[in-house]
Amino acid sequence: MEGVYVVSDGSTQFGSEVALKWSYLLEGTDSTHYLSVFTGIDAAYFNLEGSAQTDSLVMNGYWRKLVNADIGLARLVVQAKHNGRLQAFTGKLPVGDSLVIKGLYGAGKDAPTQPLTLQYARPLNKRPFSIMAHRSGGRTADLLPASENSVAIIKLASRLGATGIEMDVRYTKDGVPVLYHDNTLNLRLIQKNGLTGSLESYTYKQLSALVRLVNGEKIPTLEEALEAVVYNTDLTFVWLDTKYAGPMEPVQAIQQKYNQKAKQAGRDLTIVIGLPTTDALDSYKALESKANTPILCELDTAITRSIGAGIWAPRWTLGPQTDEVLAMKAQGRTVYVWTLDEPTFIEKFINQNRFDGILSNYSPVVAFYHYTEQ
Amino acid sequence: MTTVRRKRIRGYLFVVFLLGIPFFASAQSAESKPRKSEIYFPQAPLPHTWRNSLGLVFTTTPPELTEEVRVSVPAIDLNFQRGLTKRLFFAGRFQTQFVQNNLSLGLRWARPITDRLAVSAGYDVSGWGGALEIKDVFSSQAYGLESMPNVSVGYRLKNDLRLTVKSEVILDHYYRSEVGTLAIVRDRLQVNGFAFTIVLEQPFYHQRYVSAGFRAAYSNFNWQLWSLYDTFDRNLFYPQLIFAFIL
Image 1 (cartoon, rainbow over the protein chains, first blue to last red):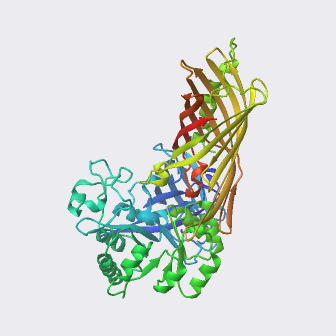
Image 2: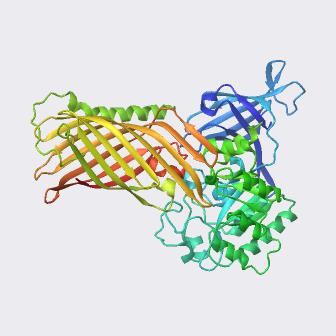
Image 3: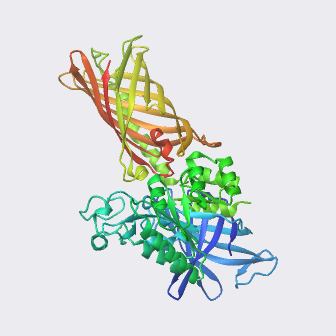
């Protein structure tokens, strides 16, 4: 079912082409499969869950546009087109038949009434490419159903198109690495509770007892976050952004522990420590041992080379930097660009085909342009 | 364009229309006397004379864009107006933060309604541009064209104090942004948002007057923050504090 589909009914709302991709979520021994639809209009995506009915496969869920607050329900039925006629999809598609997904979408909580028809056109682009979601999956400002840097958003990331995530790491007063972006506790990220000042002023016990993120989640420890990545998701890459000042050893130890756990679980997962500043670079240089510590360097190419970083990640606002990118890749390095949200620039960066991945708040947009690229 | 957006546009135009009603009302009125002591108050300078103001505008960044960092971005603000006829005047404005600039040129037609009340209608066209070259951070530039149909209502209070309320619709005509060798262009006319300004103009010392006011812009894009590459398709609130000496 994965592939690029042509949109007939519904193209004014979702564009003329969409990409369909499966992802899964593991909870213990249970797995739930989700079908995502990535569109080229207003960062719109569908989050659908399948249910097998007596004679057809029905996908229920919702669609959402990340650039605004538009949202609605969707109910689609998977069918096979055989000799020009639609019939129930039995799970196998004879040669010559094609898939057609038909159904309805709506606005808000209203029952879906608008027709949507998707017809299979071609397979997804297979070129290896990392689609990395910012803030562990998405930004709170984009009104997602889960808060940024929460375990819930990590579990949602794949459905938003991500193959990897970037998470922001800080230390609590008692030295517990946790996920939190801002310098202070503030109402942008947490529910009102009377606490002010920096996260580093509070112990983990205090934060755990008193602070809830805007959608009600606890601030997760780095270990809780990586536990979710390894055992609940199909994500293949984690970028630990260094937001803390101080020793890197505790984060390094957790990075190594979870890279090892992923290996033992048979997961294709790499966890890297990001070095965005010279302070972070100094913390890295101060590590007693740098073995088994993959890093990603956001600083210039000379520094990236000097510390032997396997990944170079420049800002997108510097442009394509073609010469530097090609030179770094020629030395065997991976090159990612961050944090790119402007859809037209995402399309251009992907079409230039030089970067190995894009970090974005709009991973559905990156997914759309990557998977539909020909 | 979505239905919601069309409704919003109709809403903006309705507000501008309401504020423009005084133009259609017939009323006898007297011209007020000093014409060099106001920039926002809807009264034309004397024909073939200039009046100018120089000050600062502070724009507070919306949390959706700068998150926990709430910056009040200052810009030098120069207004220059010239009377063309008794009621028609040219209105120019230049705002700069050195790395980004905005030049607005327009025409206003103003008429008094009573001894105290006056109104004006105008159309301004503004070109903006900015460039950022910071090692390892930015190699970007952008420029664009906007226009702002506007209506003002002014009331002359006691003690030479003037209160003006101005309403603007902000229309986007052209946008071009470049990062390195890549560029994107948007050249479709669309309603960017609207703004309301309330300004007091009064004597400060000797014969010097000042304009002090507040502008509330509710728009999709703000030229001063182009480098943040806002991708939200929803209007954000941009409060501005205005203070200027009328020269």
